[in-house]
Length: 340
Image 1: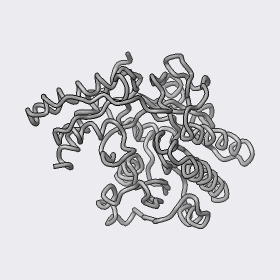
Image 2: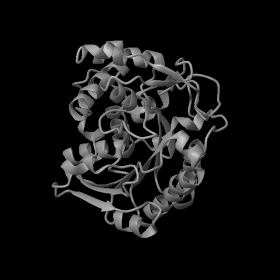
Image 3: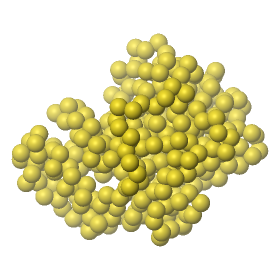
């Protein structure tokens, strides 16, 4: 396991985006809203494009009064909205998507229209707007049924869901557009991101916010399958760091590449449940007695997810700072204050 950098160690100034105009698509979503908040704190102008299909006003309400923040309620699937959002923009952080493997299995058309059609729309508009760099969210789901661990960028398997196909298609389009039109693109394969602003409600909510919210309410969390499946959970602050490094890198070899963004650790769902019980019980002793329910395995899920982050470390200087326990402590604190 790699040594952790202390939490107090902030990124050096040249690794931060400053005094730029940045478009964050999906800026009212979980990851997007965290990016917007950080970018504004670093003296940037931020344009947030969101159609609020999964994004939430609650995530950005506190930003609306900031004169450097522009909210455009629009859709990446509409060319005019993309054109409007890109006016004067230096950099694009593309986070907008219909997430969730189960959602894509239930409605593959919607996933494809937004994640592929919308992606090509915003990418092509970015070419025309002559942005300096286009950084986009890919996904660990791209690895599909590739059996070996850790996951290394150049080896992927057969995708197991329409969502995974949509994200892999994005990578192909970005590579093609960089070759055809000269736009600088960097793709970030996120591994199970968690943290503040992540919606715990709804059919397609992610496992960590769902478990935390259920435990706070003394409800039994449902573990799909035997609970021995593992994930490389990645705290939101490390994802924010990776996006900044991707925008600011001066390393020519780092451009037009795809990177795993993760902590470089393995946590089973049983271990996750036990850690949450340990961290939540001091806040409410009744949580200690909440037992999980074991449900059926979900279709399309990858059994084990564990990332090599060597490429991101070497080419981008990426250094994750939050172990699963560190990240969960901060996440629980936020949900405890916001779910009460």
